[in-house]
Every structure is written in structure tokens, then in C-alpha cells.
Image (cartoon, rainbow, N blue to C red):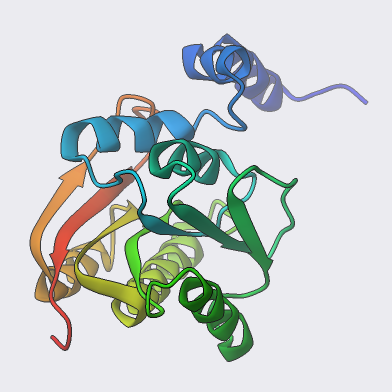
Length: 212
């Protein structure tokens, strides 16, 4: 079956992509790792011995990089509906993190690590399965952001940090405003590894304020 010009063009762009080539060379699972890497280099969110929770972790690139940053004294708890291949120093919990059973598993793992069920950083690169219909895709993407923020507010320690992918459009400003209620400092970043035509940006929030 012949590929369409559109899909053929996407494949060529993908395999010509410097970040795809770099991720293959450096052994990362996805090009998306360089988005988190740029954010980390600017804001120093993740440090050795921290506990990081990665929501929507598949295929595992962000968890892989976070595990390098926290080292053996820290830990990464990754969660996704999809399975991922095992990663060193990453505890994977498969399931929908909005379900109480999955949330409880995350809290249990944090407790076992002696962190009083609290994380230092929550990161999310989640996106819905895109249909190409903005009227459907945008509300679903914002909903995922809201769920990630809600989870962060439940498990972050005071002063903790949160990173989430957001697609600019209806609801994105309201989400930003909501995030600002819970954190002392909130910035919006467009990493170089994010394709220019994409509406995705990353909300980087620091200084979690509980009970806001």
C-alpha cells in the first residue's frame, strides 16, 4: 500500500530531525527528552535524591532523563495507561492515574521511599490521541492538564515543582491562571525541540503553595 504524500513527508521530517538522531545516538527513548532537558537546564527543577512523578510517561524518555538527575538516592515513579519497557531506578505503575487505586499505588510507593507520600516534582508530557478536529482535541488536552495539576496538588510537597505540556487555544489561559493560584512562580516555555508549527508549550511552575 503506497504511503500518502503527507505521511511520507512526516516520516522524512521525523528521520531527518536532529533531535530524533540525537536521541538514537544518546540512547534516549524519544526526542521529547530534549524538551525536558532544556527546561531543566534553565530552571534546575530536579536535583539528586528527589522523588519525581512522571504522568503519561510512555515511552519513558522523560522518566529515563529524570532518573539520571535524581541518581540512586532518589526515585522516579512513572505512570501511564500504556505499558513501558522497564527502566533502571524507575518504578512503573500502569493504569489511569485519575483512578483512586492508581493514585493510592503512587502514594504507597512514595511512602515506602520515606517521603510521607509527597513528591518533589511532578512532570507531565501527556496529550490525547489527536483527531485533527480542534473542537474535540483542545478540550481533551486541557482536561488532561487539569487532571495533572490536580494530581500535583495532591502529592507535591510545599515548594515543589510542576511541568505540564499545554496546547495553546481555548482553555489554556484559564489553566495558566489556575496554575498560578497554586505556585509562587509560573512560566511558559517553548523548548527548541518543540516543533515550531506545534501549538504546544510547557507550563513550568515552582514553589508549590498547599491548600490554595
